[in-house]
Image (cartoon, rainbow, N blue to C red; front, side, top):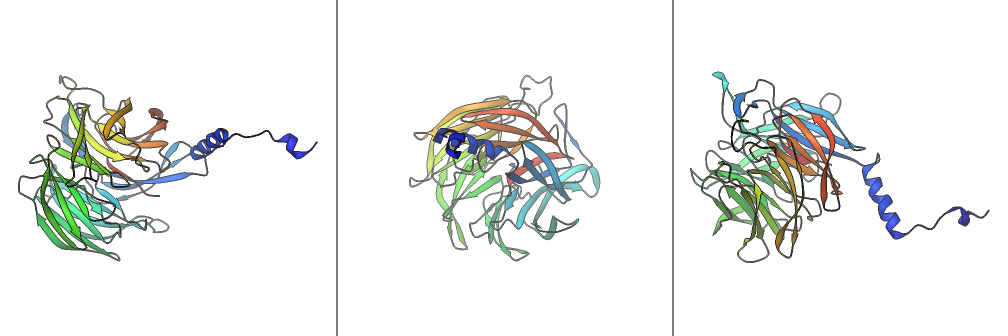
Amino acid sequence: MKLKHLIAPISFTSILALSACAGIGGANTSQFLSIQDGRALLLDGVGRVGNVPDTLAIVELKDGRLRLNDDLVMPTSLVGPPASIAVLPDKKYALVTAATKLDPKDPNKVISSDLISLVSLEGSGKEVLKVVDSISLGSGPSGLALNRAGDLALVPNRVSGSISVVEIKGQKLTEIQKIAIGDKSGPSQIVITPDGRRALLTRDGDNQISILDIDGRKITLNKKTIYAGLKPYGIAISPGGKYAVVGNLGGGQGDADTISLIDMNIEPPRVIDTVTVGQTPEGISFSADGHFIGVTVVNGSNKPKSSPYYGDASYKLFGISNGKLEFLSEVKGGQWLQGQAFTPDDRYVLVQDALNQEIRLYRIDGKQVSDTGERLKMKAAPAALRYWK
């Protein structure tokens, strides 16, 4: 029999289906960086001080399973938006901020820190991860951002009300500028547009979003301020730079809080849509292709069970349609959710559960997100997550 009679015709749809299946399987492996805060504990909604080390971990996803590849004891923090990791473009280094630390005079007390560390990701043997430099900035460094070249970082200092501009040269960090924002401003997270010309800074202390203009290493505050909602906190920008989306924390009194869509292509940028998501949208991210927006919603899961505001956390998936935020689907479950990270093919998303000290794996099929049931137990409360490679 001729070979052509042994091979059934394959449609274009079948090829796409086979390709999708291949994306799940063994050949494709994704690795992520996750930080864990050893001080962050909740017992029935009441904060307690843990006594295990902070860590930076390499988490691997392969064949639909999560695995801890390696971890490094180093200063990190849950306080602030879950965006305290930035991976340099060459994938060889990462920056990690630490907004809090144990009080050296009282092991039962947490105080502000001021540390940012440069971590090498290319070691060998027992030192795959290694801190190669650390410097002190303002108090409470939090959700940082890198420029496209990877030689400049902008770091909000939440407690001291400033932004540190940090030069990265080889394995050396140097603070080259400090921009005052305001003592009560609470600068939380910053994102830089893909063209490198602007940045947006959330300020949960005074309910504003600042625009910063970037000209090389000259960075200035724009006179225009954006008002999206009460306590803007986490923020993300789409891969193409057309949109930004911000989570508004609200007052933490059980009210339904919001996320807002910002059009970056109009001058000046402004909010064009706002929707309700539930209590406390903690972390917010765009998927790799920009089609999806993921939101971790705490939803009272960090409150005492006796509280009228107590509930299960949820992970919500949104899209953008005709300049409007479009709710797509959600997974309910987990407690005190923090960071999240999509796989490059947008078929999976990893979600951090700080209270249960684990990473949850969700699957995305079309516009539907569902729980795979896969969990990776961590040694402390996961607090920020970034795709590495």
